[in-house]
Length: 497
Image (cartoon, rainbow, N blue to C red):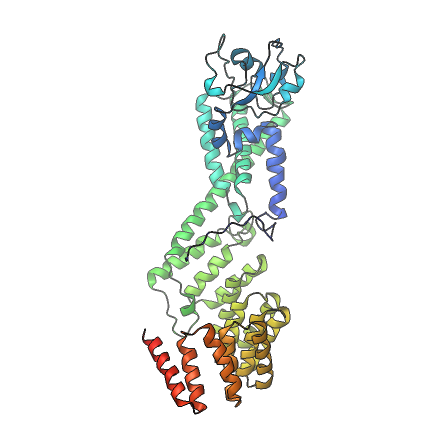
């Protein structure tokens, strides 16, 4: 079946999906310290964690809860220490257990109860709590309902503005940043509206007079709002640039060939418009609006310049991209193609050698460069390239086979044949290696050895038309005409299917 499901329980590259230090350190600062300080010890869990939407409904049916015995004296110690802002003493008085979904079962309340009246136990769930014994606990909120709606909107807009900003901010960090900015804007609003405002132990405003700490919070709120606005602006610019770029048709094989054609006037306009917008995503020192350089911008601009056949500008864009990012195969390949199109053959050759030396695993790139050398009548350059790849991967049978074929193309038959025999020893079930060896042996007059190699290849792929034709021609050369005609007839029948 062409469809096959696989499950990978382990990985060989554990750190591949982890952010780098430039993201990890701010991530820890935002989600590990700032949100904890501003929103409380469980602040991020309460206001920012995306999993709450799944867990809160399920908590109503959980049978494991904080419960109470008759020893409770309603002292309130449990509520005082609860970092999730649950009115513990009121809930256990009315329901005999904590029903608030904000309870995280951390057992802080259990540990401070002077009468050991609280415990974690199993029984009725919150969905079956029944009516309160006296009066249902009244939640105490710092926000009015209109304020909640307004701040929810601020959080949503801020989150979608900063999520993925600069191709760096991951989901959880974006939610933490959005929560912090929303909190600061709420405090700034309170500084404008209320006569007295506090934050933890700090008094931000007393009797209408703004304190120094209040000025600091107000300034942080303004800076945060500007940052969110800047991220939102860049995201809108990026969406618009992507829209124009998507309307430009780019065939990379055609662009770098002799059959390339200029864009239509409409596509030329779309490409220029996209390039102008992409440039705004650069950092401010580089003529853009960003605080940092977007690592993908130069690549997008480079491809658009390729579509416009502006190869000089494309070369500059791709070189900037490579300077600022890790090398990737498609960008590196494109830069080499651009050098060739501009007839910088010597520079392209050296560039490819350096690239293959640095990235020996990019076999497709090495294949294309070797093919370019062969088409240009430089088989010895292809051999040199193949030797470089094999030197970095000496155990690669594929690299060994390709070097052997390049040696044969360069008329270095003895070394090529010897290496090809070694390849066949390493991979005796590779039919094409056997056929290549058979052709070399036949051209050297070693027809019996060639016949043996072809027979082994046909045993592996009996319905391959090329193999059958090669065997027919070999047998014809050995004057075994009846057998030869049978193989040639089979080859024709296979080709007609």
